[in-house]
Image: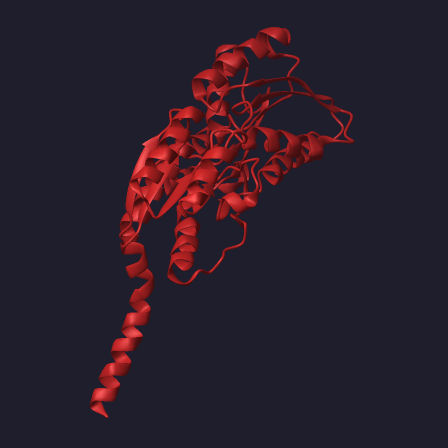
Length: 320
């Protein structure tokens, strides 16, 4: 009886350890877009932390915002014979051939936080938020807060051709549709960076009567918004009051801006895409369990009423 109990315990322990054993045997290539924003840096940090916790050998490649670098990295991962590939695609198109190559090599690919315009049989799953919904939440906040007041909006778009830029724009426009008092009067890419966000906002201000004809700024990410806030201040206006500021990502610095009254709202995009991605990969590698084609993360609206200083304190050590 004692021997039977010992064997049963060993079997149970083996079952508990199976998942971690699968992870420990995995080598995963991660093709990251770059480090264009605080959110992107946090995603990289958390992906590395998740891999380390699970005993996964993570091979990291920074594409520096260039698709050709990502394609080269994926081909390198294939040549190295990795067990899986994580891809945060810089743009939505142009992936079919290299994804076919990964499929032919029987290496599953998981998309992180962005989508591709390829057949979904070329990747295992995609982890991300509903990008269009994020834009819609931002737009609805503006609708609710301007009421019937005429409101000229300037828009800082993300990287041209990227899924967040396309869908966050579509969602925002969906929210303001039917509200004729709200109009996007200028829209230009700020490439998701603070520097470009500031530069483009300066041009918006000059074109719109020194900014006096601008009611609100909608930025596709917080980093562009932070850059734009600086431009607004340098133009002698008060961001958050003279020009409303709503953006997406919920990085720590936007909460400092909200605490100072210089930003009004942000929609959170969690940087921990790797946790669900590794869960899906471990289950697939263990027994062939197929995940859903899209694993959706939560999007949450934060405003100045949500104690932004406290939220900043929570987020500041998360790798941003």
